[in-house]
Every structure is written in structure tokens, then in C-alpha cells.
Image (tube, rainbow, N blue to C red; front, side, top):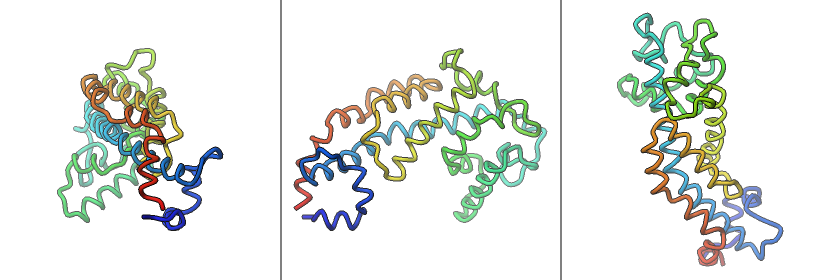
Length: 237
């Protein structure tokens, strides 16, 4: 069995502090909450995984219907993301350069698919920012056309670059917290989970409906911290 002192040394007292409440009966409650958080993070992964891959592939696919690539020259990857001169703002251009170096280190072919898969979710959310509207000189001028062509199931009143950006950015923050092993137990995860499904549904309703049926998240939320007390007691002496 594991002592609470050993656990504190491994995880740090500051980290464990995020799982402690004034009304806790003992340190086992903290450990139970930590285990619950692990389960919540794991249960969120199917929805977050599907969101990220669906959004990045969809934004790229639709963007190629908007950007006239026949007028462009390319560096190493034959798509507008790697145009020369670049159509991207500096931060996104640098992200593409890092991604290409990663592909090179792996000695993989320089394909659009590999570039799209390596670029992080934050990159794709950034393409929903104001610099990628039609008014930007030299840019791909994705918006508002991308809103019209890319999000057919989003209500027309909300079918704007700004609305799409803010929705994706909130989910990006949750995705990063889960990826960086931070606390999410104190968030309204059922609401966030519904937001993920709703956003996927703007693109693919059938996919969102399937996730809603099979996602493990609601059951883990309902189990609560009390459902992990026995497991914590079995770990901590």
C-alpha cells in the first residue's frame, strides 16, 4: 500500500491541494477525488478525440474549397497551408514549420494528411480568428465563407466566425486541461460534454448522436467522488 506522504512526494502537495476540500473527513477523500478526476479525464477522451480530429479534418477539407490553390506555389507540402509566400499569420506559419521538421525527423513523406495530423488543435482554432477573415490582404480569406460551407447544421443566427471561434476555444481549454493532467472534477462536465457533442453536430449530426449514446462520461460524473472512496482506501495505508 501507498502512504499519503509518498504520494505527496510523487505528485506534490500543491497538486494534491487541488483535490482537497475543507469538509473532507480525511486524506482518503482527497485521494478518492484524485481517482475520480482520472476517471473523468479518461471518460472525456472519446468526445475530445472525436472533436479534435473531426474539426481539423473538416476545416482543412472545406478550406481547400475556398482557397484557390491553382494560383499558389508551395514549399514542401502541396496545399495552401505550406504556400510560398505563406498565407498564414506568423504564429501559425511557425507552427507549420515545426510540423514539417517533425515529419522530416520521422522520415515520413511530406503529405497533406501528415501535416494536418501533426498540427495541434490550437492551430485549427487559431484559423477561426479575425486575421483569417476576407479583409486580410495576402491571407486565405476563409471567413465568412467557411461558416456557410463548413457548419451546415449550426443555426444561421450563430453561423459566424466569432461564435465558432469562442465555442472551439472554450473546448480547447478543456482539452488542454485534460491533456496536461489538471483538475477537471470541479467543472460542469456534463455541460461541457454536451457542448462538445453540439459542436461536432454542427458538422456531423450522426457522429454526435452516436457519441451521445456510447460516451462513458455521464456515468462517471454520476458516480461521484464517493464511488472512488473504496478504491482510495485500498491504495492508501
